[in-house]
Image (cartoon, rainbow, N blue to C red; front, side, top):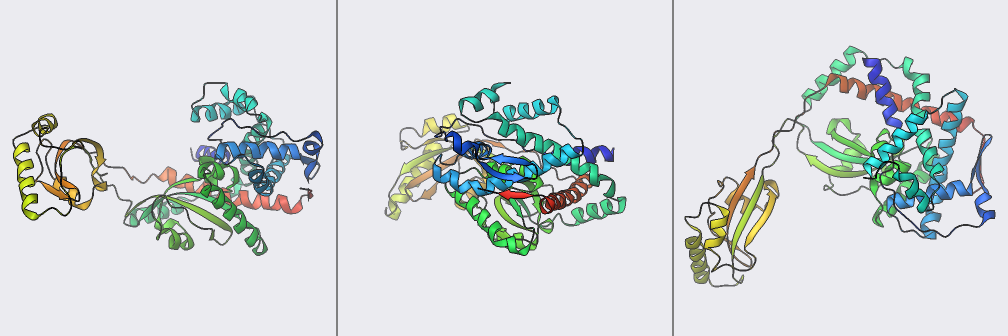
Length: 430
């Protein structure tokens, strides 16, 4: 069973899927330009056409501006990605690995499914957008073959003992009071100290792209060297003790939705998107959702106190005795302002403190006490309170085993491609 987890888990780490394929118009390059060689990788070559085709795909899926400036800015980083893909495909061929038609079709079908396309629609969309499907197929082949190659070389050397799993389970149980962060990541590895500046510049270019409206997940799929790249950089919920101190020191001061500056780690540069945060990872009840209605009487902020008191008494009298939202709004229709009515569904935890105090424990169908606001007086009624089931944080031994195994295989994978780069003949002519 565990060997099955090993193989399934790590192969999934390598599958890179596109998230958004849209139409785009580009100015076609002349024949001389497209036939020019951008880089030689051992006995293979990457043409300027190959490079431009991949950039077109990245631009469309990332929603970047379709300009020459964008294309030029992406050339260097994209060429490095293509060089690595060529090295992986060459190594797969040397070791006798091939993709099957079924694997390719399954990958394309999954892309279509995630993009809500009908079966078989993706190739025609790429063709109509002027994007050669071969650039997508190369990426798919590389993502399928590379985990197989790494598994064949290193799987037998990775041994995760029961004692290690026991220790990880105990640690997870003891750490449930620690904060947890929902993050997405882009990881650019460092082969040596001298590469630090260039890697940081690359991450800064990605930040600039995001600031121009690029999709974080799409950039992660194209450029991140982390196993999470297959999921658009989505690393899921991670406990504080599972993150490097360098990352914790940065994201602890961030708000959900923010993206970090480049973070220097021991062997990489990280870019983190903090999507959410929880004080701890224990099994907990999510905040109830309230369906609210309000009766509102307009009143200036500087109204005299006696006028405020008169308005509050009026709205109280007109809502007292109602026992559902329909009668609540109907009884107050003659005195209320146009903004009275349903407020829709609102998560209780997102209500301002003064409103939460008024309705937090209020039973459905009971009018609240009148509330003074900046622009009037209101009475609220909870039409419906929906309490979700508690989220489960059960600790799964098999999942922890797979996480440990996948983590070690990822280290071997980074080492493997680094060794291939060092021994390869690579001539960049771009």
